Length: 163
Image (cartoon, rainbow, N blue to C red):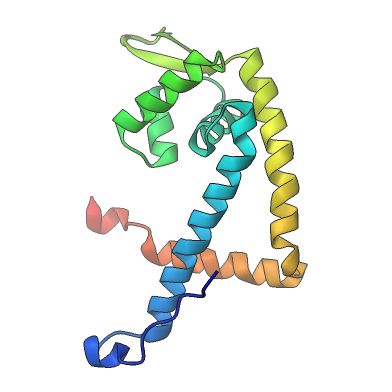
C-alpha cells in the first residue's frame, strides 16, 4: 500500500499549513480505517460488526444502559444506535425492555449469548491487536499511547467554552 505523502507543491497550495501535520492526520485516519476493517473481517464469522462488538463490550463492562447512554459512549447518532441494537437484537445478543425508572424509555442488556460472543470477540481482537502492534516495543507503545492522548486532549471539546 502506498504511503500517504503530500505533493511537492503543498506549501504553494496552502502556505499557512504544515505538511507534517497533514501527513500525520491523514496517516492516522488511514490507520484507523485499516484497523476498523481488519476488526470487521475478524468479527464477521461471529455475525457482529466492529461497532456491534463495541456495543457488546460496553454492555458487558457496564451492565444495562439506555440507548442514549450507549450513544454517548460510542459517540454516534441515535439512529446509528437504533440500527446497531436492531441488528444485535435480531441475533439474540441484546434485549431491549422498558426502563423501570422511566417507562417512556428503554434499557438495553446483554444476553447470555451476547456475553459469550463478547468474550470470544475480545479474545480474537486482543490476540490480533498484539500481533498488529508487535512492530513496536513496549517503550514505543507507551510513547505512542501518550502521544495519542495528547492529540485527543487537544481535539476534545472544552466543556467550559462549549457549555
